[in-house]
Length: 284
Ligand code: SF4
Image (tube, rainbow, N blue to C red):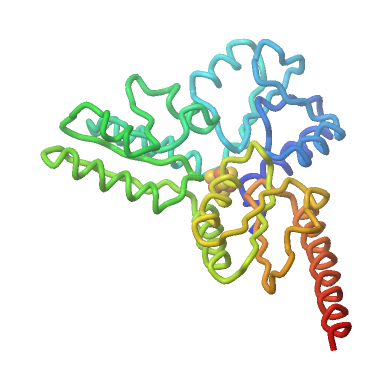
């Protein structure tokens, strides 16, 4: 669980660079407020629009950006540094290959997510889908080329691909699985854990797509799931009567948050156990 190599490397790269020169990151370096606040304290600026950038060096986040955005930044005279995760680059390359080979690109993901926007901005035509009804609304094409946002649950992605194949049996559907391995591993581990516990805690930023996906996946297997951003969000009464508690964290959740949540959970659950024990003694 916890932070993936893509986000970790991007943060390290930004911190090293910020020691050498003033730096602005285009967008949020990680979808986690705790991480962002720490980076701002270290002097790293974050802006959503090129027009607001006041430093000469600009960094692209792990989520990547379109060639169009990068070229606009270069034309404005910025030095552009890319912290794009290699697994996001793989999605860009896969989509470009499918288009070159004559497939109509379909992206399974969230239309407004920064990673998906970075992908679609370079495509002349495409569809972004996330639901069964969006598959049903697609017009027919002879050849569909499908990729997925890296943080989508792989089972849902496969389900939509198979629906697409069923809906257009006469079309060729080629799917390149671009859901990243850290996402798959965290999803699989979280589901396995959620099946075995009575209460599940998921730590991560409120803006983090993969954290929300982890929560949704856990909710399918565990009746009591709580998503929190930090240890202070934990409710002392959430664990009443529970013998087993599971804990996982999204790919943008920093180690110190994971450790703080684990410590607080230990504190809360041991106190709960002590209270149960003293109740049992008083009943004897
Ligand atoms: S979630 Fe996956 S694709 Fe995104 S930064 Fe992490 S490793 Fe890379």
